[in-house]
Length: 402
View 1: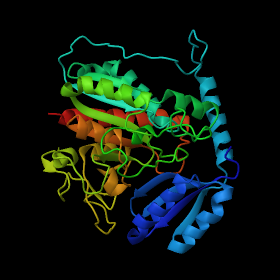
View 2: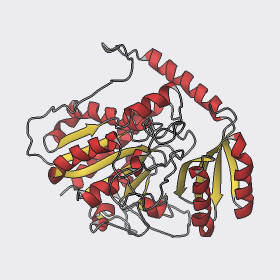
View 3: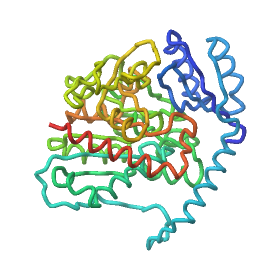
């Protein structure tokens, strides 16, 4: 399926990023490319997968905009096969008992099960797997469930109710295991028989269709024919709306990029009224973002501490206690800001809906590791380290909830 497909990392000058990304997104809407990641760190870059038939078009764009291009994966199909073998070995070492329906890893239907008694506690919502190919996200959600049900979770369960949906796109997830490893959307029929699927994270009824999506059902970012026209989206909306008055924290897990994203994503410079509360925290009495002994600041989307000798151009500062914890405890660099400011504009996302439509005060998207070395093909050996990172992040978030 992906024979001779390549992944390019395109380093784009800041002043060209907007127009170049828009040109690339038009090609994606036409089915020429698959944009895996647009991000800004020490430099602006885009990771894009291209099939042989579209390589000429991509090279033309690269030359037109004078963009630096590096091949990070010469043959995606080969990488998928290598990853599959590693995954099979990991599974062989950890045999899982098959369920009665004889499916080794998937359940056909799963209800919300209540495991606590105190329904008056504030609620934390966590979901994962809205994009099928982001396998590390459901694995991380399951890891969090395991931690909550262990002695480590006792304190959190005494203070909060947790609603966790480990996989909100099960059909797409199964399809990414059985047929197409890089499948992103769900598997619903569309008006074109050969182009099934809707990007569920463009389907929520908040600023739907305003930006960062496509009306072409063959596109990876197809938003659907109308807002919330997908069963998966409606299911999340029904449950979230019912519990929204009690819900204090909304987390949706994605990959990749190591980011803590804050609403709103539908347009740049659009922020909720509690934006400063979402991004700025105190650590040992010091406001993160300063230059004190206990501060950590993200400059230009790279982590810089007071002891750092690296000089960088300061374009934007985004600071968050979670980033500090992840760096301090796991030596892993995350960055923060609104998706529209540090990635790209994308309307119809679940985090924007949670904050903008349901008024859940703390809403975040977490883009899990890595930074692009493995992209979506993260080896199984990452599951526990990433799970520990997000467990620390979850505890840090809940410390701040008012």
